[in-house]
Length: 232
Image 1 (cartoon, helix red, strand yellow):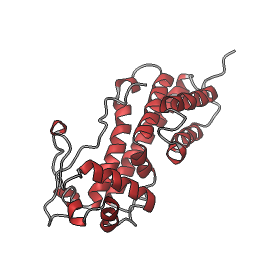
Image 2: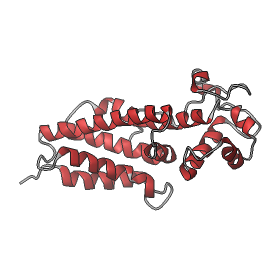
Image 3: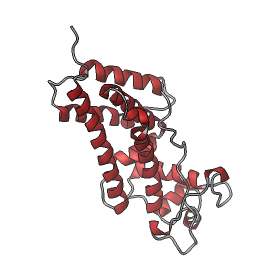
Image 4: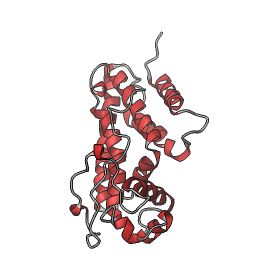
């Protein structure tokens, strides 16, 4: 399975804040040039390390229950050292959700998602979505557990709904084209597709006995053996 539309393998960094600017996402400027490498702050830490640990802690304790003190404890550094990398906890959340959503949206933006038979486009998008989930598992897990209590969360949920809406449109197009079954309610089909794929974050273990490619093959086989029109 080709990579999802050439999406970057790492979240784009944001500039570090001054000690007194740990406030808002508005303080964040444009992303650094990836060619310059990860932004270094305190010795032994960079923004990517801080972000990876933050996502793990958010998933274990919940975003709202995670303080900067808890993050600092898990990183083994001071809170002020975290502020050297990002202006606020909300910026860590925004970076993590952008990384998950950018990968998903890149699948739909790939030309293969908009050209050809509808069922082939749907299969491409489902495979790409599974690839993003397995490659960015902690980040997508965080996205799927959002409650919508902050502006950052609500913005991410709006982007997720738009993604879901576009995939549902592919299901409907394949149904109208006659390449998938029309005797199943399209809303049921869409919900079952999302439910099956999103459940990956709850049980899939990267590096385990089931490779990501085999997982995608299994899901696609299961989905389309049940969706394709019956042939005589």
